[in-house]
Image (tube, rainbow, N blue to C red; front, side, top):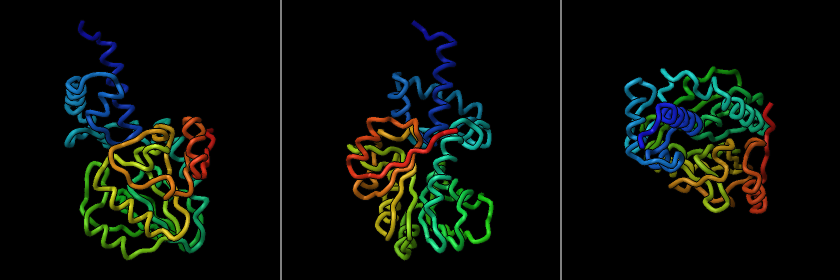
Length: 257
């Protein structure tokens, strides 16, 4: 039986929401999440591409945030992300040098850091669009610009990161769980995440909203034992939070107002 128009619209709305939450997803991931075929997902993505709502890339898609107005900075998800970023920013102290990876949540910390003489070393190309602040110095790693996340990866980024020791790191992820560890959906980001963890001499934080807690993705950046803190929201899966704490990870759950 052919799907009704209402069912198609509901599915397509769900796809846009998923892309909004997770930045980028593969066709396989979308099909699994929505319990439908990959052919159906590709047809829906073709529909969105015609309207310039998404950017297609090999095996998946991400939102075109120039045309899709309900992005992370204007949707309900922004409340969670900003709350997590604000809580994490309180751990930054005067004189710190910190690593931030390609995470949109971690990048929001730049709005909330109040410590003085802080240096932020990041491979997040979107950092150039952040408002400049006194006593906050942003250093880009350089490297190959990878779309659609505008991440800087490759040998050039890795070589530059190898020359830096950070006081703390604040990293986002595609998923975090006791079983899978700290994972990403993008292979090229693994080496950068690994070096940031290895070259951090102090506390190591992962920032993850409720959609990422308890999830596993294809590429492992580190184990739970490599981390000190998870900063998430109070909507995260309670059983997974309990398991993460039992594994030795300190978990900060931020109430959403």
